[in-house]
Image (cartoon, rainbow, N blue to C red; front, side):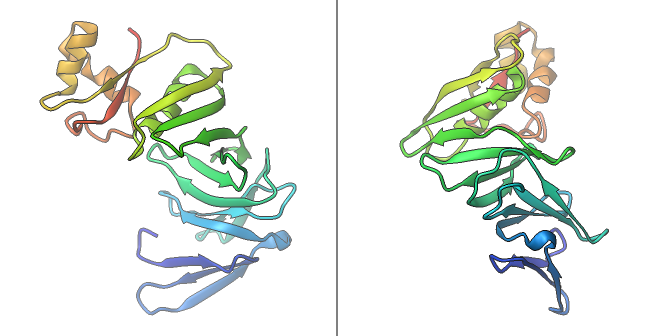
Length: 219
């Protein structure tokens, strides 16, 4: 975690924390006899684990401060695998299906969304599923396109709420957000619109690099 403490599981119902300073070990038994498989520590310090062999629970979250376990519900694959937080602060987990599927988890409601099927064995990634709006769809495509080794993304997603489509742009040497805004909007001062559309992947308007894919929202 952010303090250097080490978290681990036993692929069963036990969670442990090893203190970074004195190597003291704390242990917890996950309630409901829920076994887990993958584990990660999110940016807010809470520990997430993908549930395993469950028909009702998709993931488990543990808050060290309150010593409380919470359980995510929604679409559940019987055998889960990894779990991770992306650069935008969203939680994702995958299952053992073929082709593999990834599931978004809403941190606020602890509800797992419908899975996306991702085929990325070649340099082209395919994304499937239903996004709640156009912006979410475009950010999924953007995230897939910024993965090392992926040359292109085949969009096979649909959206619940139709909105104007954004364009995508690949940064080249010498680019700035102001320069890109001038090209697309005719106004260099509109660079913050591009910056906001690509947060939290972009942490600062000046921090872009050649080869990076950006989402350019409609005017």
